[in-house]
Amino acid sequence: MSDLITAIALALALEGTIYALAPGRMKAMLRSVLDMDDSVLRGVGLAALAAGVFIIWLVRG
Image (cartoon, rainbow, N blue to C red; front, top):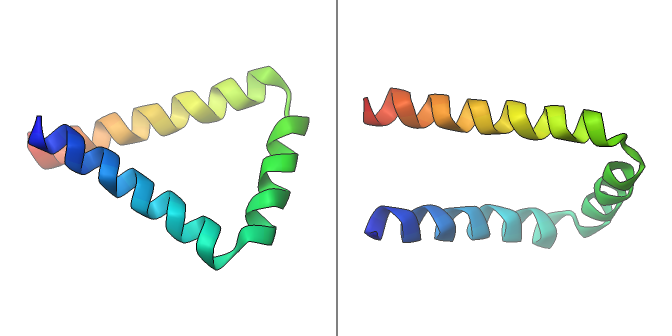
């Protein structure tokens, strides 16, 4: 459970850093995400999911 809470906290810290350092660029990126086709967004999400699982697999074995 501790690992899950740590992972969520790390995700929040990274997201917060992006919003704090470059709020205008983040808004622009969010606008471009709204313009993406659902299939493209789904593909990007699946690729990110696969990369995350792969990295966890490498680190945790």
